[in-house]
Amino acid sequence: MAVNGNKYDILKLLLAILIVAIHSTVAGMVFRPVLRLAVPLFFIISSYLFFLKQSTLSTRKERCHGLRKYAKRILMLYLFWFVLLLPCTIYYREWYVDFGPEKLLIIARSFFFGSTFIASWFLMASLMGVAIVWLLASWKMRNGWIIGIGAVIYVLCCLVSNYNEALKGCPQFLEAYQTYVNLFTLPFNSFPCSILFIGIGKLLAERQFAPSGKMLWCVLGVSMVLLYVEFFITQHYFKAYYDDCFFMLPVTCTCIFMLIGQSRPCKMNVDTKKLRSYSTVIYCCHGTILSLGHSLEHLILNGNNGIKAPSAIVPILLFLIAIALSVSLAEIIMTLEHRRHLGWLRYSH
Image (cartoon, rainbow, N blue to C red):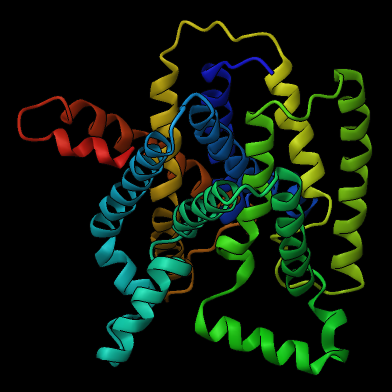
């Protein structure tokens, strides 16, 4: 595959917009399978770029340094937005209720294994997933085994999300699953679901899988059809409450990533590094903006003022407002970070 960072910067921005669409419910249920491609593709991109750099390093010491550098970047990004959005997070997570040692443990668990500010789970999931795959590889485990382990875990994530209704006949499994959730969090919104996609990213970074473009297009077409079939089956027959994981997502996302990688390099008169910064800021702050927007919507539309709005208009407005405010905030940050004593703002992206 061609190594062209510009394409992945553009793709990241598009994926960030898809994630805003998921959380604002602007696209409706018909487009949900397409929107669900966003997070797995984010995992594959992050893994691919990380392990591509790792493949150029010759010693274990250099690779360890690369992992520490990656971990530091993710943690500084997480801490920046965690602190900035903390007042809003305390409000909508209701951390102020019965605050004490037990609540602090809940916050710590949310920080490492779940979400603090909305959608933050991806950051720690990416870091922990990359670290796990890196360790397995350092123990000389082959990519096939890593992907196999990730696939087994991902199948379990699919079963407890979209196919949870079918598991009611397995009370022992559900009891064990609930114990895991109580200790950590939902596995499909945490690091377990990332391992398969990070393993795929590593495999592609090391050029160990390179089918032709025609084959990829055929597989992509079939997998998209099957993804929609799976979506409608789970919605109508399994009455899925969570729709984060589908069996066809790994195949579909891998094909999309490889087709983009095999395409011609993008030439744009735009600083794509800036687009990358936009995507990071949009991802990190959009959930909080939408949460505040929903609170304001409830206050205005459900108050005693008689104001009503068509249900289809509100999600569109929230989506556009979240994008506009996120991009504006990114512009402000990238302007201020060049000023004296404000260089720390770069940790936001």
